Amino acid sequence: MKAATLRIFLAVHTWVGLVAGMALFIAFYAGAITVFEHELQGWEHPAEPMPTREAGFAESQALVEAVLAGHPEADHQFFLTLPGHHGPEPVLFWFDEASGAQQRFTLDEAGQLQQRDARAGWIEYIYDLHFTAGLPRTLGIYLFGVFCILYGLALVSGVVIYAPAFLKDLMALRIGRNVKRLWQDAHNVVGMLSLPFHIIFAWSGAVLTIGFVMLAPFQFLVFENKLLTILERDFEVAAHVEPAGEPRPMLPVAELVRLGERALPGIEIDGISYHEAGDANAQATMFGALPQRRLNSMGGIAVNAATGELQNAVGPKDFTPGMAMLRGIQHLHYGNFGASAVKWLYFVLGLAGAFLFYSGNLLWVEARRKRRQVEQPRRTRVMAGITLGVCLGCVAGVSALFLGAVFLPGTGAALVYNAVFLACVAWGLLRPPPRAAFELLWLCVVLTALIPVAGWIGSGEHLFAAAWQGHWHRFLIDATALVMALAFWRMAVATLHRARTGDPNSVWALGTRPDGVPPSGTTEPA
Image (cartoon, rainbow, N blue to C red):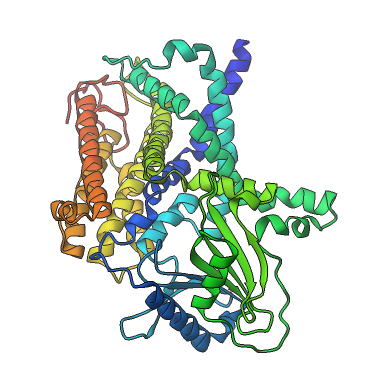
């Protein structure tokens, strides 16, 4: 390949990585955590016994009736999750168009209706971080769609750059005094070995965030505004029916579930979507797991909620090509297949992806330092500070959410995360980079190491008691937090060693003033 062409690909790879890299770091780090979304549900509370099947149905029915009585405007559409895979209590979700927010309803022990913003919980906030980076939800989703496309460009350009030396340098980790070469090797190895995973994420992320936007040219220019109608059968189990305007009571939750189980034998229904509740044409669409040796294991049954008339039943083997592709993309993106082994694989690959973007920015900083002079360009110091603040601020902020769930239960998750995150960004910009890196890493160590302590206080069950009682989800969460705290501590030690003994002509060397310029003639640590 010509040198000029290679330089173009290198420029694309570098600048695309810088533009999208820090947002994608947040996406990968938060995404790695939320792979275990269901396991996180019971972390800060003692394990609650699962109700009997009939008791769960009765509580679910009471919840539906309470919501419709208190919020009759919710009858147009709402979603009910049943006790089971999602937790021991039923939960009802409804999007309130008046407030523009999704509401979450549960029943307390006295049977009274409890309501809160569905995205206010700490687990939900980490989940939202994965595709919004803490920005307003709609804006964040669209921006991440664009970042996923840029991410794809970075992957293509990175492969073109690295492909000529792929086999020779694939497993090369040249450990020595040249720290930049070691980071470059680690960046290349992680990127190439996890390339299939990154291709899946770039593609599926773009489809899931801005898929409808990408369909717009075909909708208006090719299919004369009829494309979404044509694709409806690929998005829904059954077409929606217009309300009849005739009130009619709906069948109980228990009877609806039994109708669904008869229509698709073997399905484990865990959620029901209601449309036009209380109308003669009310529709209930039930979803649940139905393993059939497919990537997608989800089945769906749509019935008339008033009469029980079956409208459609679709198992994984019966999906249309479009639905099979869409559901397959979702399962590939979230790792909802292969049970625990795949979840742990996605967790490790998610952390590796975060490292990829973090190391890419640090390599940019290191590549632009002046090797023969003490004074370094201001842009490298600013980029170093932003990278440290955003990336380590995300790590510290996510760990702080675990602590806030126990110690500040009445405080919004967004407030806890943003306070820690913005403080870290400011710290990264105001402090010299080597000091900021060491101090922010120690903040990550402390906050992450406190997660097992918070879990102990919140649940009354410490790490070893959880293992003894067989509560493996709590044990593994706390143990993983300790391992990650140890990793952050090791990074902090290495950072301090590099600052004291590395090349003094660097923004990572100690002895810098707050503006990042070393004092004249001084190369010793401050």
